[in-house]
Length: 285
Length: 285
Image (cartoon, rainbow over all chains, first blue to last red):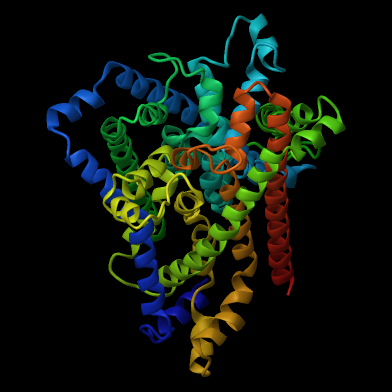
């Protein structure tokens, strides 16, 4: 460790020895402007054409507000569930050896690789009253498909990988010394976990849960098949935008979309700033 | 200490805790991921192999498969080139705004696909400021394949760069700087030094981009217009069949996308296995 460090600091710093700075940065900026930023102008122009009163009226419409609530609540529950399940998965994958571990590790990414519409029809079929899970749950008096609970199920399915993949690397690099010291001093597993391990995992766990939450807020394909899409009850905000579009009400669709877009951009920037801060703290030690 | 007693060093090493955690994880993974995956194929083959082939041989289904492959074929190379250039610029050079660029790149992850589709519709649709110009020149991008390609590029643009950036950061620039000092040209440098180091991550990025491109639903459904046999991609076709109470046919099409997802996961497991083997080989030398 010390040798690599001194080698790195002794090496004279070449500034831009490598070729392609202009080409790579220029084309990246061009691409991002063309693909990501330019399309935003359409939304800005569309909403700028609305009066503030119209805009406010559209985004605070009762049915739309109901959709915000359903979406946010379902995403909160789904991401908390994924925080717990993701932590468990990451722990088991990092700490233990068992047959089939590699398959389990690969399966974690299934929700990323499986198209959301496929996930949607599959979950709807499984949790429908005559489905494999649905008939079991029906006996317990629980309805999942075509209720807000179905939205939670779909959202947690599509965002399972986030917490696992953010916690896993941190857990791998955790040094055993403090943990061993705690155990040698006679602390129980649980209290060592809570007092020593959890504080180190906390930033990564928060990042993972926040990513899972952001993804869940925007999830569309998986949700609409399971949700039943009943106005005021199980309609998510992305679907509200879609409904307004089908009514050819472009201003209303744009206004709602602008709210969703601002929320997701704020979340994205907040997560990135938070991540940069805790990375700095990690490397600063 | 009694000789029979296990010396416990790390949290959760006792067999009782270990096997409980592994057991709970495996059961939850089975319920949440494995059974849904199996049920896709079960539903697809529920009426027998003949019906399965019949539903895949339907002309509209075949057209949807063709269109989906065509869209992926255009999307993947665009995002491959962009991903490499972006990863090169942010890992090989320091410049102001580098962090911002990386955050901007994450926008497609955070934005709801419906909002993404809407952004394109507002700009390139007949009412948009570019769309109006296109309309005058008799060019239609929305509700046609170019629009589908455009939103698919948007939704899948972070994947290649996301796979490359951590790897290229970790590898550092020493190898490449040495090559430049030895007189390699830009292209030689990339092909002989950079590419061999990143080829597996790059390939996985491409495969993941492909899996997301063939599966994109929300954004495509906004800009496609859902014209059966014309602008229906496979995920949209699945929705159409499913809502038409042709569940078996829907799952037959879904099984194709599930196979692509499975190949993606197997490939990822393979790459990780190779990496571990390489690390072990390095450690023993």
